[in-house]
Length: 489
Image (cartoon, rainbow, N blue to C red; front, side, top):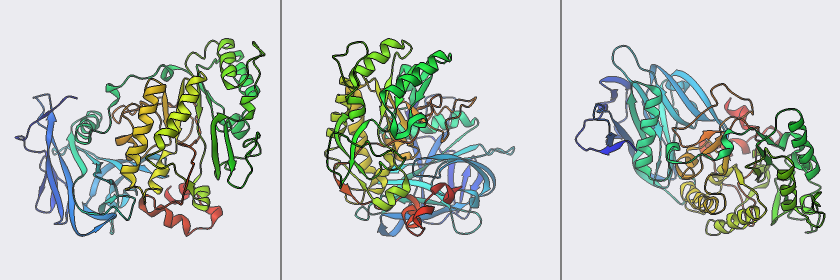
């Protein structure tokens, strides 16, 4: 890890009076008296570096499930941040004052200056059953920290490690060093250099979503791959998106025509998964090479044999969700003690059909469902533990793409084995390839991958609260205006 324990070094971040200092230079002023700073016990294994970070917490009198506490004023220092503007998407932001900080900021870096102030990274963490983020405070320059459990049954009043500050002369090395400290401190995730990337990371991929939406069918997938091959862009990976699973509405009779009349995007939201097997469109496929063989297993065998470039991947994804449908209909939840059965049943079936991997999406809905399950952190731990165990068992622990999982719950809890993540809201390629190795997974922007879901429910649970009281905001708006991008951009 490149870290050693050393309780003797003095921190480069200090809280002196009512000011946070970085190498003696002020970064936050008017820090409230209830803010507590604790030097990190870890430093770089490189003895030439004596940089030690600082954990930050606070005390309040009344235990609550959600606290918003000022940590000081930020003014006149350029900042670059990473904030979540949707439940599952995040983006870059800049400014120079506390008023420029966005809600649900998950990482913020302060610029260095010529008088000796280094780059400073502010990294909200998980502490016990609570998850932290930064946001603008009351007034022009205040920065607040928001600490929330996601359940009114899980309350706290004393925090010591909900925020980590680290300094450095190079912004890229700074982030890597800080994430190493978070890795050792939390012990719940692994960094990219500790994992092996799957082969699909270097392959051109095609996703069926924009071509078919819910109407995806074997003939269309075949023709799509054929067209790409003939056009000189043979795919090395294919993602079969929404439209392959067996689903129905609660009020619909269960028949052999599972979900076929759900043809518009969003119509699948109120549906239930009724079996792990594929729906009739894929189940009734007859092999063009061996007519006696049927089903999606036969289809995958045929298409891999016909188009040799698909060496590692016909991948299947799960269902697509949208916030407006979630708010109006609620969403189902597999109880955390049973979720391992869901992943095991689905993944074992897909593996038996020669599926090479899976794409997992929209799992951040868990934060809305945590009221009765010990809070968002404990619920997420149960799901990620089950998911990790299943992909290790069936897909060698690495043939997984994580999409729409831009919350630090996932980054700190779900990346023990997952090393690929979609980190852009659009499918556009970028020269930089949007690498996020310091966080624990690498971008997969070479494949246009749409929104899909973490898993279908078998029991019902109404949604609860979301970060920064998003649910309250949404419920105050007319149904047809429920667009989170309008609220945060």
